[in-house]
Length: 190
Image (cartoon, rainbow, N blue to C red; front, top):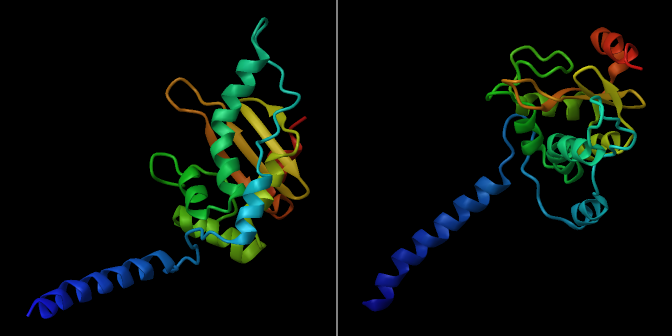
């Protein structure tokens, strides 16, 4: 009788483990999967350092360069780490402002969720997170209100923020050369 009593809880436990395993391995309809540990991921994350912030100059006289770098590292660092470790769900969350990607500048994707935008980058442009991390390892250009990173045809922008809006990742074009707005804004930077 004791063995029969244990079979039922054991069967329930096995079903729960199966459901959890299925959920963790589930690929949603956008094609974005949760990151999975692997040998290649371990070697990728081992090379992750931080975004390049060389050459930044404080705007205000007497401002501290170290504080400026720390400020930008706080804004750019989360995007860099998510990109370098290929955490596509985290990247998707980072391009949202107040829960929506509506104000994020990127290739046209009408009514897309942030996960769908990242999936579009991957499907249509062959984007990999490490592409963005390498972009952020290039020397930034200071533009009014923020920083622009440009490497090849890829461009990313980060805004310093304003009184009521925090600094954040504001734009990414995996192929700036194919987008007239991106070409205009990127060419206007020094």
